[in-house]
Image (cartoon, rainbow, N blue to C red):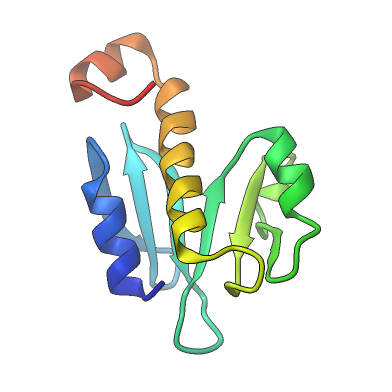
Length: 121
């Protein structure tokens, strides 16, 4: 997934905002809370970081091309960073980005969720 494809996909999700921060990372948020980060690539394709369930984290962290997300996972959060497509193709990555968006949206206050309009549950 190229950076443009990543940004286009994240922009297609409901109630998202985009900012470039943290040394040029493309950060996507829902309700002001981060659900996806892309950047820090060592080649043509960006590393993509996303929130996942605890169970998915335990499985994904052991897969080639994936790792616990630097900084976030070291603080006990279930975030994975895809560095290569070796174990996760782009369609699977999109599914995990959708789920990350949903997980983050669910943690927003009821008032914040209502202000954003309809979100996936």
